[in-house]
Every structure is written in structure tokens, then in C-alpha cells.
Length: 332
Image (tube, rainbow, N blue to C red; front, top):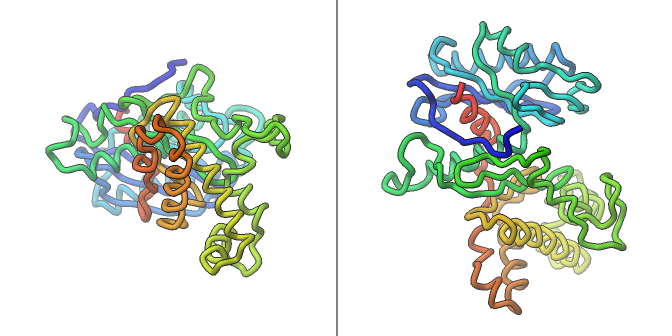
């Protein structure tokens, strides 16, 4: 298995489709030859192998039709999905939330057949989110600063940090998607930071994700008023609740530690905060940036790295993972 995959340009002037398949919804995006998002689609997920394949095929056809195109205009399809993905074989297993467990599901082959032979690439959902973030950040630059070729910069470096059920990062390094030799690159949530801390589902104690994940935040500040726990926590902290202020500070410090860990190991230009907690928006970004400033005060070395300037929020209102899947699908 290759440790890194070059994010390249499409081999033709055709479009590509990307799908982000989650436990409740399928998000789709159609990219034009220049990397522009031409259309998007959202469909409910149907659990089980047959439902996933049928839903994915429907999403591809609908997003293509929305842009007034046909499947003949599509070079390939990329698909991001949770679970254990073998990108080379195009298979997935243990996508429990999707009703896929046990034997490997040959998703790439099944979807390709359903789409009349279109090439299909299957990748882990976090990895396609990282590729999508790189693509969007590159396209946000002035034309003069963009890399030549497609909308994804071969020189772009970033980590996409998913703050959700767990904590993990997808890595794009110098335009290459970094998986690692066993696919564990970016699993920073399982770095122990407190030997006396709570037991982690991975079997270790005091892992970073037991403090800096959406699940950990909800456990520390359970929702009481029907809103998401992160929203209620930040609202209570803004209103001056001392306990909420303390919980928010501990969470922000832990996320800042994740940012510091990523920069000190792979020195990425951007650390993109995504996942469910990122919907807090600017209040989350400001809290993490402030924690990074505080952590750097006693260290001229950390100060020189300007960690707080490297943190950005994942773009809102754009299906980032679907866009990344479409970028990978362009290689079809």
C-alpha cells in the first residue's frame, strides 16, 4: 500500500463527482474541469449494502442532471465513507453506522457497474475531507498565487481535524494524501496525554480524544435545553457561568494541544477545524487561537511558529468531503 497519493489533475476535460456517505445522509458534488463546484445534492442514506450502492448511484445521476450534464461528461467518481477502507481494492468493512459489517463490501466495483462502468475511487471520509479543504483553500487564493494546473495545489500542506464523535486528522502534505503504511496517519486522538485519565475505547487511558472531541465535550457539559451541547456550553460561558467557562477553557486547551501536536510533527501550513463541533464557528476558532497564544507565552520557540495563525475553520455551507472525493475521482 502506498503511503501517500498525489492529488493530481484530471486526465481529460471532463467533470467528476464526489460523494460523502454518512450515517444519515449522502452529500454529492459535481466538479467542472477547472475544479469549480457546478452542483450539489443531498439524499437520505439507506442502510445496508444494496441501499448504499443504490443511493450513491442515484446521487451521482441527480447531481449530474442538476448541472445539465450526462454521465458521458464524467471522468470518474470519488466516494468518502466511514469504516475501514482499502482504497486500492475499493472495499469497505466495519462501516457499522451504515449497516456494513463483517465481510468486505466491494463498493467501487458495485457502484461502477451501477453507473455503466464509470471508474470509482473509494476513500476514508476523513481523508476526502482533508483533500476537499485543500482544494477549497487553494481556490480561495488570488489567481496569481494558485499553483499551475487544477484547483488543488501540489504544494498545499494542511491537516483537517475532525472534532466529532472522536478526534482524528486527515493529512495533505505537499499535495499528497498521507495515509501511512497501515492507514493510521493522523490518528492523534489516541495519543495519551493523561496516564490517570479516563479509559479510551481504544484501550489506552487519557487519550487526547477523551478531552478534545465532541463526545468528550458533551459528557463534560450535557445538553439541558434541547440545543447541541457545544452550543449550550459556549452560550453559558458567554453568560458568565463559571463552570461553563472552565469546561470551555479545558476543551479549547485540548484542541490547541492537538493543533500543536500536528504542527510540531508535520509542520502543516493550515490546521482546519471540522466536524460537528466546528459548527460553533468563530467562537470556537477564537477560543482555540487564544489557548494557542497562552500556551506559547512561555516558549519563544512556540511563539516563533505562530500556531494561532495557522488555525482556520472548515468552510461552512460547502460539502467539503464531497468536494474532496470529487477531486480524487478526477484521477479516474
